[in-house]
Length: 286
Image 1 (cartoon, rainbow, N blue to C red):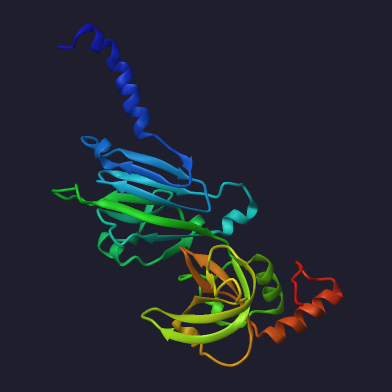
Image 2 (cartoon, rainbow, N blue to C red):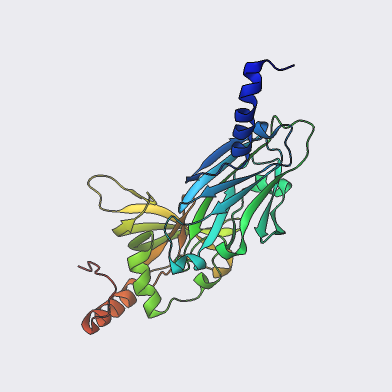
């Protein structure tokens, strides 16, 4: 039998329980525990992540959560965004679906998550419905992944590469110089064929911009940088003579090639656009 004090607190406890099950967060990353679902395995928690990149970690998953990935600013361009997720090598315990108006489509099964492969989908295709897979022992189950929102103009990336093997148009080259995560002038030194992509080793003579440390300096007295840029195998890239202008995107800490014209061709294109006043941004070509 409840004491009068506990009886008076029971409505508050139930209110807390209900509001916790409906908890949502406007942030970049989320970490939760399925232990709060113990005895309430039918609860579905709503999670809202409103950043261009972040992470999710769900310990001891039970029941299900719905993850709504949205940009932090309302814009007509938001409808053209893609979402890419990269599971950690230890991720397990759930199946990940796309949920659009209550219709589920399997995106990533539990047994496939440990491969750590990137999976992308259009933001209009729905939210992520992450459902726990029943296990006798959930103590070692953790679902974890990183996510990034990718705009159409940044097509470079492990699963948005269909167009990147084709030569860029003049307009695409000029826009890439202004909007890419990295822009650098240099040479191709080596190409390694890996299981699912090519790894291009480059030596950079002029670094215009890099979002993260893609290219590492050769030293204080040496004005050169080196780094690796990934490309899909089907592009058939080879090492060779000549200078290139490398542009591209950084996805989950890895550099992926975008437009990469020969530098002399870029110079001609840039100066023509400069004379016509159609350059979208200024580049120091001296």
